[in-house]
Length: 127
Image (tube, rainbow, N blue to C red; front, side, top):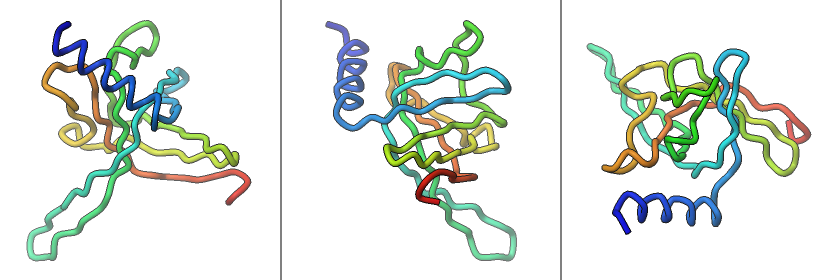
């Protein structure tokens, strides 16, 4: 068994245990996929000012499952992700607009991709 397959199997096992269903939207098209939730702290520096830190909501998903319009795609500025909780709350996140920080490979084989987002809205029963 290849290391790539072992990585894929490990990701699938983690998703079975702790993954959540999300929908990635691009314009009028979308794709549903299971992803592992996470977080990353970013630091933004401004000349003459104190650095600002913020925490992104991350999603780790199999790269070959991100298919929109029949084409494998990478997350980009303007894409949004929705997550619907069991209580009916719907959280909407936008992919971070900076191309350098919107996503990165989660492993050295290019099996999984880590998508960096920030929450832009929440609606539902718990709102």
